[in-house]
Amino acid sequence: MTQSYLEDLFLDQIKNAGIVLPERQYRFAAIATGGIGKGVRDRLKRAGLQDWRFDFAYVPIMLAIEVDGGTFLKGKRKGAHSRGWGYEKDRIRDNEAAILGWTVLRFTAAMVKDGRALRQLIRMLERYK
Image (cartoon, rainbow, N blue to C red; front, side, top):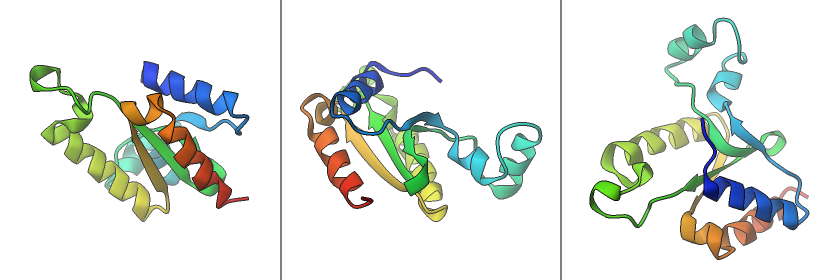
């Protein structure tokens, strides 16, 4: 998967704040079913899961972060995360992640750009100190 400008921007903010860096594009469902590698497709299928990834993950505390671009676009330019099927697929993934014990923080482009995403991440990480 490709990383987006927003993901890069958010990661830069995290670095500049001196926060421990999260893993990128973490394949949580594959790991939950026995790991990445031989047999992963079969294990995911048997578990009723897909090979979903989080944009960012703090694995030891099971905290995931998703950065959604295009939330305010209209018409054909509308972002995948805010269109009907894309929105539903994200909810399915987020719900399955919650069932597996993950907390998922979701941020829009505006939240990343104006610093709200970073402030909320910092507040969340304070809970785990």
